[in-house]
Amino acid sequence: MVQLSKGANGIYGEAAFEVLAKAQELERQGKNILHFEIGEPDMETPENIAKAGIQAIQDKKTHYVPSIGLLELRKAVQDEVEKTRGYRPDLEQIIITPGLKPGIFFSMLATVNPGDEVIYQDPGYPTYGSVSSFLGAKGVLVPLLEENEFRMNPDDIKERITKKTKLIIVNSPQNPTGSMMTKSEMDGIAELAEDHDIFVVSDEIYSKMTYDTDHYTPTSRDEAKERTILLDGFSKYYAMTGWRLGYMVAPKNMAERLQDFLVSAVSCTAAFTQWAGVEALTGDQSFIPKMMARFKEKRDRIIEGLNTIPGFSCQAPKGAFYAFPNIKETGMTSQECADHLLYNAGVAVLPGTAFGPYGEGYLRFSYATTLENIAEAIVRIKDSFE
Ligand SMILES: Cc1ncc(COP(=O)(O)O)c(C=O)c1O
Image (cartoon, rainbow, N blue to C red; front, side, top):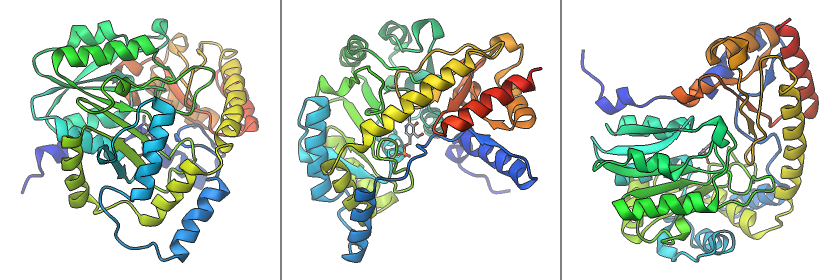
């Protein structure tokens, strides 16, 4: 039989979508399932943003636009990066993408060769490992330890750097642990990258989803001009997951190549989505603090609840909307515990191992749901262990 490419056999999917499919099958059988598996806000896109998108469609902004993105949106991103990261990138460095995820794919395609090594957090977002494997690169895992509040330490990276290291990927606030790295840790990583001539991709999709802790980017050191690439997007903090809108800030020579990736892969990001993005960045920003106040209440409620379940213990995340309890004392593996909760408690969660081997002994709860569902889930989980 004719064989698929090595890349096609290397790439892999995401457990969240598999668990969702299992949960939906149970729902079809009439079971009531509480959903804690999918990582998206439970709020709707703010009305001013949705209206801007609708208006753009009515104004016939439904054609091809430049691959690199609309000038109006790129200018808004330029102001945004200056405001939030403290440096003003050149317009030539800014590229609009359909969601942040293509930014991961394209920046890895642009930097990594087969046989290179890519360093990333474990447990971590599965796309980094999947794309490394697709490219025939070696994923080098940095374990995130509970005793270090799941933060990646520059010393742990240093030990893993070899002549083949081409890229370090950082994600803070982090999925799935909700950890956030400190300024000195970020600076330490950027410094290591300089010393060893390595690229750094910084996935900052949760940059505005923090609880009383400041967000830092490793890209401020070289202003994304030489070796760092900033990735951010509208999916999470503007509740726009389905609109597919993100951006990259990259060194100019790379940005030129990235444009051609976009031409070849998608032509451009949808025009009306980009106009909605202009409104998101330049319009009323009160949605984000309101959403985060609600998430804080949910966080406090779920952490308190999880810590009352025998065999569970959970630190409070500093950002994003995920709780990552340690379940080692239940005597189950992550997968066994996730299956137990789905089939015996009707609570859909992800096993920590969906984010890499160092996720063993943990579960991920996305608490983008109602306070009532959180309270109900805690009761059901306790009952399921009795
Ligand atoms: C760390 C991280 N990066 C990227 C993404 C994907 O973002 P987008 O939906 O904008 O492609 C997610 C979504 O869950 C994420 O958790």
